[in-house]
Amino acid sequence: MPTGSRIPRRSTRASDSERPDGFVGLSSGPPGKPSSGSNGRVVQRQGNQWRPIAPPAKPPPGKPASNTKFDHTYDEGDAFDDVSAYALDVDNESQVMPGGGVALTDEQMAKLDKFWSANGVKSATQRKNLVKTAFTRGLYRDPERLIERIVELEDSLWRAVNIQDIDMGVLVGRFPRVLYFEPDFLVEKLRLMRDLLPGVNLRRVIERNPQILSMDATCTLPAKMRELSVLLPHTDVIRLIELHPKVLSINVGGKVAENLANLKALMKTAGVVETAVELMVAYSPRLLTSDVTGTIRRRLEQIEKVSPGTFRRYSDKPATLARLLCASERSIDRIAYLRLTRSEDVVAEGKVSSEVRTGEVGSPSSVVDFEVVSGGSFGGGFGGNGGSGSTKLGERKINSEIRAVTLSAAEFSERFPDFPEWQKAYEKTRKAESAEAVRNGSDAAAKRAVEEAARYIRAAFTP
Image (cartoon, rainbow, N blue to C red; front, side, top):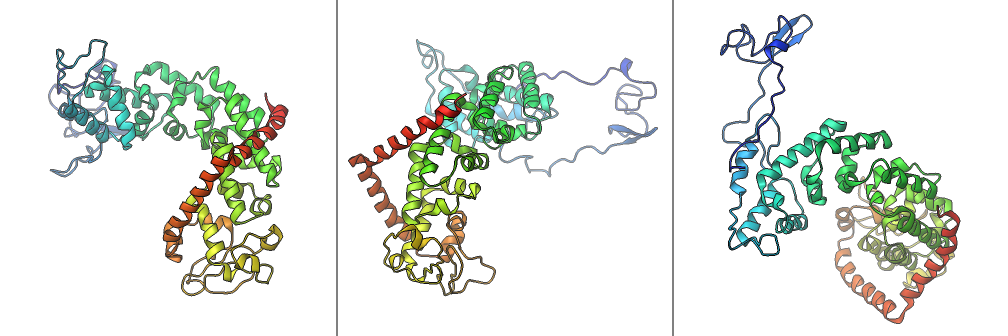
């Protein structure tokens, strides 16, 4: 396609012979002259009368319609003129490689990177992958064809199930192969998905996991949903998919079933029953795709180490358990900080625990109910009832592990200004302990223990 040319568009306007008698519009009346009373404006029927419609407002002179990405609307076509600035001049003699593909120069790669950035691909890693793809795929070296495919894709999503305002930069960045899909075939697939997932926000699902567009909606997708319903008989599978579409990209009968069995075995060691585990998964489906025997197990051990008995106390609150396990290590370090540095203010059942005061981990019964009160202008509290101290006006006490973990980083640092420095030192100690556990084999032994217990659990519910 020549540089700077526009994509031809098929007119959807009805011909004069197809218009009803008495139709009033831009094309009625003598040629080249707008109809009487319209003054060149589009008109719309209101009841038995036709009224003029004001033309769309234009942006002020000198101000572009969008500062971040191209305008992909069908009515304008200005985006195709702007694309000419990103056109690549490939030298067939020096750049085309014998085995196929093109060796792009640094300048050409920089142009493509700017092109994808202008079209909403914010992730530098995704842009790098798209530029790398351009070495072997001709489509990704032609900005004009790319814009044409993006427009076709956007139109297919709208025609199929009326998906609007989807972030095309996210869609293409996460799944570049989507630009190769045939529009009509994609429309049929999306309509089948709408039947399989009624009431689901398909725009959100597709943005989070564009690979769903490559699945067979007549066989693969229904089979995965059926397997999930067998693994989680008391869970709304459609809602689970909406919350975490990535679960569809993983082998449900293999990896997902294995993760669920590992999670049940792991939580059993903490005193949590299997029914509560299924509710945990319903609240946080990402547990099904996480490294249960590795990352999740270490999170549980980290929390139990600094606050023994936490998961047993919250065993009747599955949502809280799920949020604790999905928290970052830095967030979990807050529990250790409040335990170790605020120990002089810990109150357990109305009595100060000497074991907690000295920073030593005591038995679970001695630290079940407690409250840390930082006092002064920071205030707070941690766990249980009772305690003394003050908080700022309007501030809530940090009266539980979950409150400490879910509090925003800015608010926690404001209340405890010394936490960032303390956390850096504590993180070094924690990582050193983890490395030692890997070296002496205790980490691998704990992992094997969970996997061994999970074998018997999986045998009971494997489809």
